Length: 410
Image 1 (tube, helix red, strand yellow):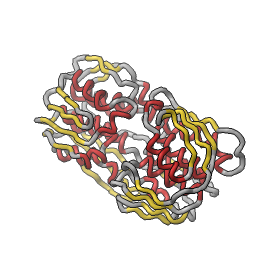
Image 2 (cartoon, helix red, strand yellow):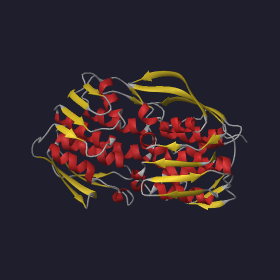
Image 3 (cartoon, rainbow, N blue to C red):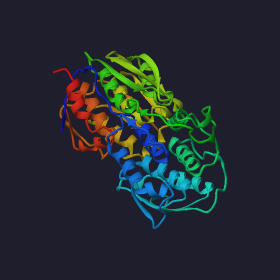
Image 4 (tube, one colour):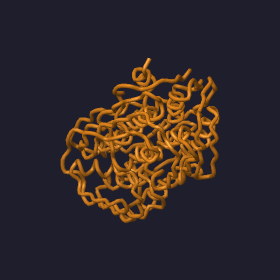
C-alpha cells in the first residue's frame, strides 16, 4: 500500500477505547442486570474478548462446568490476561491459545500472581497455550505486583469480582486505572491512589457505559497534525485519562501545538476535544515515567522526534520488545527507511532529528498495527512510503486508512 504526504484538516472519527471496551464487556458478563455498551471498539482484539465471553458465558454464570472451554485469544494479550483473571475467580476450566504472535508474548507474570490467588495454571514455557484448571481455594487476598501492569492488576481485580471477595493490591506505579474507574462507576466500593488498589465490594448497580474515544487511535492523527505543515484538526470526545496522555505531554515538551477543550467526565472517565496543529519541534528527553504513560504511543513519539531539531532520548521502554513485534527494532527500521538515524539499547532509543524523506521506500509493519499506522503518520510529512501490510490495523482501528484519507487535504 502506498502511503502519501499531506496535511490533515477537519474532525477525524476515531473508534471507542480498546482498553475500556475489553473491561466493559467483562463487567457486562459478570452483571446479572443487563446494561448497554455504546461506542464499543470494533477491532479484532475486542472481538476476541467478545468471542471468549460467548464461549464461557454459561460457565461464568455457574450454569455449566463440564469439560474444558477452548478460548482463542487471537492476537489479543488483553483478552488472554484479563479473561484468565475472570476464569480464576469463577473457578472455570479453560484452555487459552492465540496466534503465532501472541504465543511469543509472556503470560507467566499474570499466571504467577493468579496462582497466588489459588488458581491452577499450566503455561507453555511461560507463554500460550496455557490451561487453567479452576482454583482449589482462595490462597490470599493481598498482593504486591511483581511489576506494575494494568493487565495483571485488572486480572486480579476480575478474579476478586467473580469470586466475590475483597482484594488489596500494592506495588503499582500509576498504571492504567480503567478497571478501577469502571468498577466505581458501576457502584463498587474501590479505592486507588496510583500505588494501592483496595476493592471491598462488587458493583451495586449498573448503567449504560459509553466508551470514550480511544486516545491510542486519536494519537495517530494528533501526531500527524503536529508534523505535517498546514494541519489543523479537532478530535472529539477522546479519553484523556491521565495514565494515557503521555503522548500529548511528550509532544507539548517538543513544542507541539496540542490543546484540550471542553473537558468533562463520562462513565467515570475524563474526556475532552483535542485540537492539534502543525508547529516546529525540538528534541527532548522522554523519561521512564512519561514513557510509561505513552507506552502504546512510543512509535509516534519517535516519529515526531524524527522531525525535531536535535537528538531525542526515550527511556524505560523495554516492554516494547515483547509486543506484537519488537517495537523498538521496528521503529528504528521504519525511521531508517526515511533516512533518520535511530539507535537503541535493550530499553531505550535515541532519534536524531532531521528532514525525513520517504521517496517511495519500502517499509514493513511486522504484523503490528501500531507500526503500520505509525508508518502512515511518518509519510504524512516525509513523503511516500510503500507499506507491506495494511491489514494489521484491523486489530484496533479497521477504518484507519479510510479515516486518514477523509481527513487529508487533497
